[in-house]
Image (cartoon, rainbow, N blue to C red; front, side, top):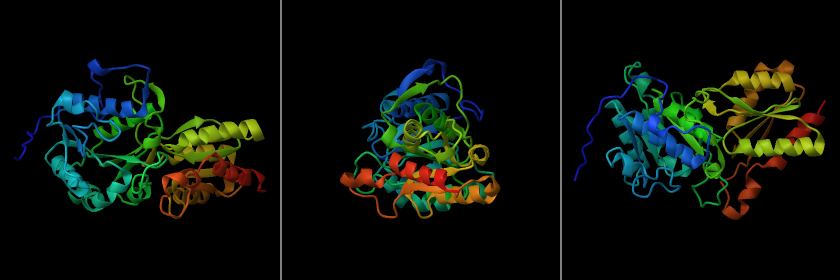
Length: 352
């Protein structure tokens, strides 16, 4: 039987999302998973055009239970399950956006995005330009991403470089529960398509979430730890890794590392990165994906092109390896950790 979804009118036209009074929580401790759930709940409550869908998101509440309770609260016309067909999921999202909806599809795991690649690159990313800006494409594609959970093949990929090389897509990666909430609210309110990469290794880490005061917008980086010796530029799950490494560096070696959390990979807040590198004179870029043509290569090139005379040492990269993602028993050896980062820091500090 074919399900018909009626096209509702919008609740409001503001670009900045407005939390519903009934769901406001101030300075409440939350896991990242619950913060994403709250953001979806509040977006659904604030705008009848918002739809959440994907594999097992309604009945099961998602593999990580991130969408738990949404179908019960808003009904199966607002939060619904789809067939196991990622290309169809994104194709549905494109069609719904053309009809005036605000789709929030989920790709169940990062490695499963490959079957949807054609729809995302050929259609989702191109539609606003193809129509000379007359048709918005307010689609937020949620993808649980990156490694660190001991999963099997295709469940721990770093796909950000694919999307960053595709003009027309915004790409964001939260590192804290607060950013998980606000980056998702800003993404859903955006008229452009947004790839929202959720670091699943951090789903269960807790932090404060204030839904009454909007967090920094898409396109704004933040300094998680101020420092004077080396700038560490990273994002997502590795922000916590870099912060821990900075504390080790201070305790053991007396190095003072500044940790910059990009939050938004496209648009990129290069001004914040540049201000930090000008202060420290040294930079290390850290990401989970393979080294060759990873986002760190672009950042290193940009820093050296624009800040060459401010640098005291070459820009270095602490990354994953140029191999397929390994089995769970080798995962800790593959992922960049404090040791790999501090090796780079040592080289930056000791080079003339």
